[in-house]
Length: 258
Ligand code: GLN
Image (cartoon, rainbow, N blue to C red; front, side, top):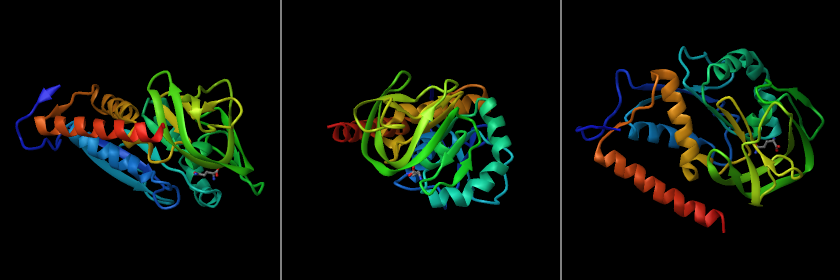
C-alpha cells in the first residue's frame, strides 16, 4: 500500500467513491446509520474521498454509484418506501449486475427479495435481487446474533425482526448461525443472503464497526468498480487509526459473543 506524507490523505481527484445511502428517513433503525459512518471513515483512512448521496423517496438518482447501503425499518416504514424502491428496481439490479457492492439490512434486505408479506397480511413485491421471500409472524426474533461465513469468518451483530426469510436455490446465505441467534427463519440456521457482491443481513447493531472484514470487502469492491483496483494511499497516522479501530472491533466482538 502507498505511503503518503501529508497529515492525512484526503483523496481528491481520482480517489472519489460515490455511496448511495437508501432511505435514511424511513429505513434506518437500531444503529444502521453506523454502517455509513464506518464506510466513510475507513474510506478516508485508505486515502479515498467518500461522496454520500442520501436518497429518500423522490430524490434524484446520482450519476455515479460505487456502493449502496441501506438499513432496516419496521413494516410501516417499508410500506412508505416500497413504491419508490420499485421505481428504482431496474437501476439497482443493473448496478448489482455490474458488480457494485451493496449492504442492505433487515427491512431493506427483505425488500431486495421476491416479496415480503407483513404481519398484517399486506404483501409487498420486492425487487428480486435475492431469490428469497419473507413472511411476517407474530413472534419477534430479538437478540445477539453470531454466525460463521465462508468468506468473512465469524460475523457478529444483533437481530430484531418478525419476518421469517426463506432462501431459494438461486441465493446463498451470508452465513450460518452458530451459537446464538435465530437468523433468517429460526429453522434452517441460515442468516442473510449473498448474490454477486450484494449482501443482505438481519444484523443491526451496527454491523460494520464490529465486522471490519465486511466493511473492507465493500470498500475494496467499490474501489475496483470505480478505479479498477483497490490501492490504499495513507500516512502512518491513518494506518495507526485503522489498527486502533481493529482493536476496538475485537473488544466489541468478544463482549457480544460471550
Ligand atoms: N419489519 C421487518 C420485520 O420486523 C423489519 C424489521 C427491521 O428492519 N428491524 O421483520
